[in-house]
Amino acid sequence: MGAAALLCCVLTACGGGQDAGRTGAATATSAGAKATAPASAAPSSAAPSAAPTLPPGPGGAAPVFSHGARDGAKRVALTFDADMTSDQGPRAARGEHFDNPALIETLRRLKVPATVFMTGRWAEQYPDQVRSIGGDPLFEIANHSYSHHAFATPCYGLPALPRGQARADVERAFTAFKKAGAERVVPYFRFPGGCHNPSVLRELGPAKVTAVQWDVVSGDAFAKQAGPVATQVISQVQPGSVVVMHCTRSAAPTTEEAVRKIVPALRAKGYEFVRVSDLIGG
Image (cartoon, rainbow, N blue to C red):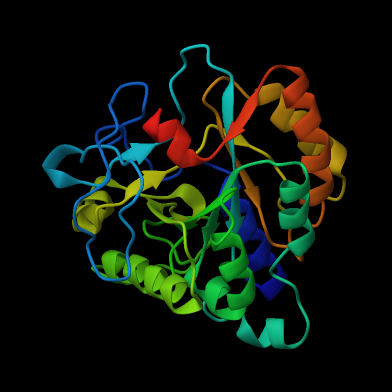
């Protein structure tokens, strides 16, 4: 697979198929499981513990959250995957932009809370932005792995993480956030591509993270026009929805413009924007 094709698979995987590799046995959502208080002890010095999480799944497996309660409360969480794989440093050095500062500034200007799921490699590339995002009370930083490799296969052509390395990869990303000086890091993890299985959920159990999926796919990866992205989100959002989008300028160039359309349209429908922690805690 060529580099461009692989990158397309990677970005599409972040928001293109939430059911890939999923199993229902170890899945919990806020509609059917009450959030617990913040954990009293983090799994390592790098990992956070100051946000609500779901109780463990069967056998201590990491729980999975896909959307908030469908109780009529019009709350929606916009989430943004800040993707960068472990081997994309040379491309960044040549000037490719895996960040999107304009998107973050638009969220600030519109006063939209959001959860940003970062890879550890992204945090290493853009430490100043990590500190800025993590220091802003509008936002929270969550974990999207260190390397953006697949935790279960097949997964949209992503390279496979070696067996037994899931927890280490997640904790390596938390360490990268801490090294960058990030605050407001929450104990949530999003699988690259959304791909997981019961085995990897059990492996992540000791990391004490809640795995966060989504119920609305924005379609912003490699979109050439913002209008269809905005229309897709606006038409699919329900009370408690988690929307997956991207904070990656080179591969999701229309996201900032789409947000400028999405936010006023959903507010006109009575929706309140919240972070994932607000949905889980609510």
